[in-house]
Image (cartoon, rainbow, N blue to C red; front, side, top):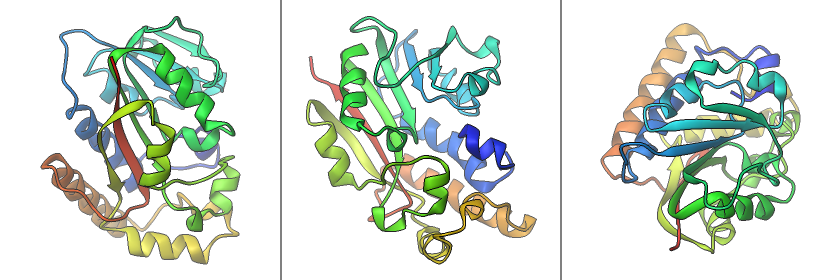
Length: 236
């Protein structure tokens, strides 16, 4: 969870935060697994994703906000470092996998961050990420979270021209129409982004996203969505 969402009172029971760990697991299951691999989590935030990531290797967490890092249990990570995503405090070719879930949009010079990821990845290593989709949906909630932009699959692919694409697509397709309409209608309301829904509606949305995660795990791709995801490999 973004620390600013946490400060604004976003609930862990919100369907987005409940469905996202399963989505992350689906993405990581698409890459070859080693018995022991090092994973760098850039922009780890308050650490909700770390428990999921820890199933796949040893986690090194970095974030620009020390208060967010302090919320991550020490038992789940090898280490936590306060750091700028454009100046990672690690040697070349250190990690088997780098992940950044909803981070690139926070970085003014996103190509510089991508170059840093390329540098710290081992040859043949993987970068797994999500970013918010479509600049037309840029809203007050984006500004509140200090986003610089939103993305499309094509704009993401240009960023990763030094990598080989394994998979890319859109997430949050089944709920895209109402979610996009809500964002367009509340462009000037920063508190509307992660407002808690009535319990029954929240449960229904969670069930739909869980079903979508299952469809993605079976190799289905969607034409649009609220998020862009990607799995890219550093060329040997």
